[in-house]
Length: 256
Image (cartoon, rainbow, N blue to C red; front, side, top):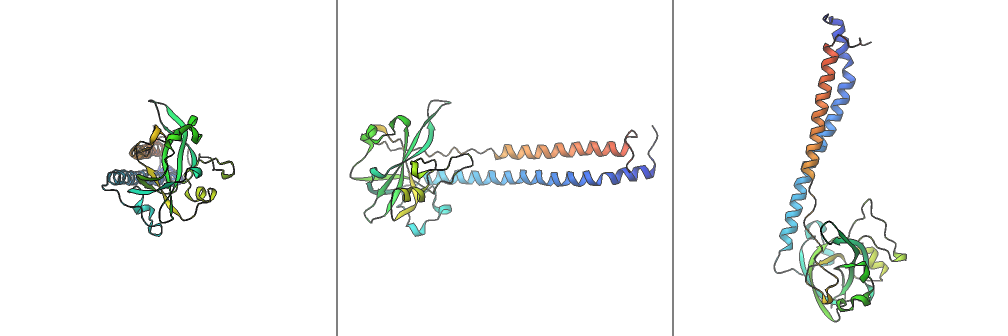
């Protein structure tokens, strides 16, 4: 095989600038995504640890004053509140709950206002009910009367995900735990900017079933990071082979 002349080698080297630059841009993006996933992994692990720590706090604290609520600092704190349930203003939010292995139960989460002695109201996610118990009279035992005590975890209003339908208050169709929207639809005043997810303390009759908040949050960020780093490594390999052939293979067409 004839060796490449200096002019041919120089021309081929210049022809690598455009694909080389494109490769560097793509490589920077891929490495950035990998590093970002590692950072997200650390954030998720810290969140899980915080939830576990706060979920076992004893004794439960009182709910924070409304104007002092800080979602980042206070969410997932274990609290206890007393008041009277306003069952006639409960709201059913579409949702799923674990059932038999490999099968989820379809139904609703029951959000009921808890009226406190000071006139303030806190929405309580009392737990899950299957679709067949949608009517309150079919779970009458769980409609607790008089003063009640609720222990659970503070949660912020739920943001609607990309694939979650938008709630329709006019049809009373709710798909997220939207505190402000539910309060307006139920004509509630002086409502807390947070809600309480009730713990697994059994309700009379067994429904609603509390304790649905779980800390087994998906944490696949390490897998995602390896994927991005793997693609970056493949990109380096492919460009290296391409560049070597461009510079050394006599069969390559001349540039320019």
